[in-house]
Image (cartoon, rainbow, N blue to C red; front, side, top):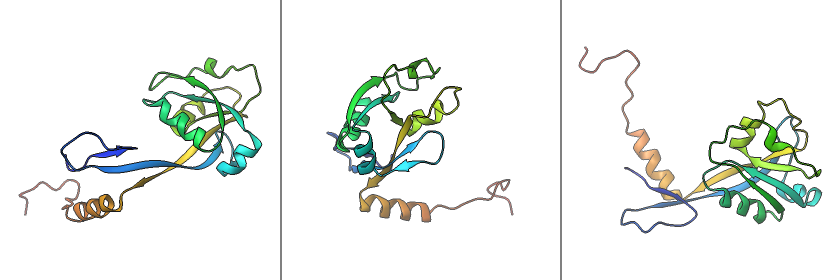
Length: 151
């Protein structure tokens, strides 16, 4: 292992670690082009239903809460194969999901007019990026079809 990158806080390991964090960027409608900055989205929709099928749903809900949203939580198993039945909510609250879940939901033949996903950016320590760039620059790229030892 060349690098250990951890999300949020360091692990109790002897090996060097680099921290990363996800930062909310925009809320985007699953279908269409509409997008809103977190502040504007929260002003328009202070209460939402949050739905996710990821390995650490708590982190997603904490991220939503960090934007100022009040969230009614719906947790699906990691890698959940959405059927659309999960999206049959009686109240008219907007639904917010992860980008991973949005890709799966967009394939379904259901009303997604009030379904948004949170686009995030990933921040990592500058030392990690510098080291990774150096390591990548040092790689030797062999063109496809060329076998080592050929002249």
